[in-house]
Image 1 (cartoon, rainbow, N blue to C red):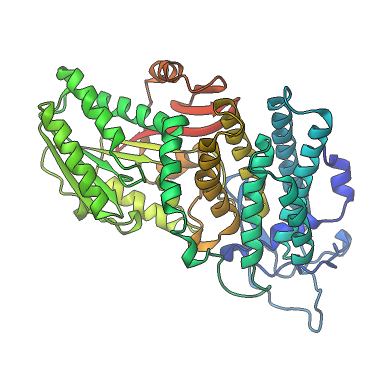
Image 2: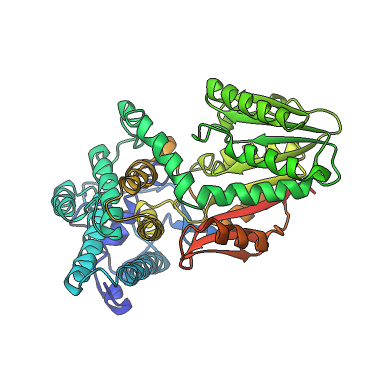
Amino acid sequence: MFYTLEEEIMSPVPYMQSEFCSDNKSYETTFLDLSPFCSVPNFSAVENDSPAWFDLDETRSHKRIKQEPCSRTRANSLNSVPKLHFRDYIWAYTERYLAIEAMEEAAAAMTVGERNEVKDEEGSDGMKLVQQLIACAEAVACRDKKHASALLAELRANALVFGTSFQRVASCFVQGLSDRLALLQPLGTVGVLAPQANSVNTFKAEKDEALRLVYDICPQIQFGHFVANASILEAFEGESSVHIVDLGMTFGLPHGLQWLNLIHSLAKHPGQQPHRLRITGVGNSAELLQAIGDELDCYARSLGLNFEFLWVESTLENLKPEHFKLLAGEVVIINSILQLHCVVKESRGALNSFLQILHELSPKLLILVEQDSNHNGPFFLGRFMEALHYYSAIFDSLDAMLPKYDTRRAKIEQFFFAEEIKNIISCEGPARVERHERLDQWRRRMSRAGFQPSPIKTIMQAKQWLEKANFCEGYAVTEEKSCLVLGWKSKPIIAASCWKCP
């Protein structure tokens, strides 16, 4: 679509420049000059006194660069290019080729999904929009503000909030690129990208409404709740005292919908009822936690359950084992719905420390539900490509679920998914919290923390639930190595896995 592999090998290296001039503080390096006039040195002349070397960590798309300090630098040269090994060039070219290949798949999916409503000339406009987005992302990555600003002006005219699914998703990426461009700092500046403080709560009411619409209309969160509750009910068998720790009680929904459904299911099956059920909610709003707890307590007691609600007002990073008032003899179950990716940081220490705290609770079961996509790569342009592919599928599914000019769809896209996209695209350092990773990556992380996989046995029930929920054709549940994945037209969207202590 865009380039052949032969053209990639013979072309200049703007992608290589843009990857290495990522604004990620942990990966800002000095081994490439990023001026627009930077050229590639002759391979035969490469000598590297202090080589940069690459650790292929975790996944192929998530590569961390480690650079040994240079012992010498070239004086009086503004455009000096430190010397790289031949494999470094091959790696950069390969990364660019794989990224473009991913975009070809996304563009092809977009064309197929809109075949019945988009004319040939509109399809070519879609291809042009894809190319403009990629070119603008490269310009932003290389801090070429003049070129990026010109491309953004063109994109704003073509990326329509009420256009085709790809035009709508493009409008969200244009917002993210614009924010990143505005926050760019000069080369060599130490710091991280972060949104303006006064923008955090600007659209809080709209965001809350959008989240409720996502829960009602889209299957992602409900799928996580269904799989988690089914697994918890299975873990209840034979247990007299159960303590559930919910790591995201104040996810944003005004009610404890997951736990209302669980309590209802327990009441329908008296044989599965434990003698005592305790739930501890973790969140950042004591007022909301208390309100949810009162509602759950009232509902449970109306059904005759011995129920107790506790809450911990804290961020996940600040949790300690002593925050959970565990009782002797009770079984612990940990529930995490779209929460742990926020603990993932540029170094793995934060998540590892938190998983060790969870391991100390010795849970019988830990339910992990996360977005199944790699939006935490070290390079900006790689994250951009991954996110564009992922959210194109989600916006395509919204086309099938809601009419073109439905205001609910606009709210879901602009106040929920657009916020995720902008965080992935425009933020760096601690400000970037949407650090989604693939299921295989979570498997490695959980195994290193001492957890063992616990197969999910509810594949048939999950398929039946999806069919009865009747969201729309195109969504499907598949099993992958004893985990469940919800996908849209073969594109993985969200994955559920279960873990236990040995």
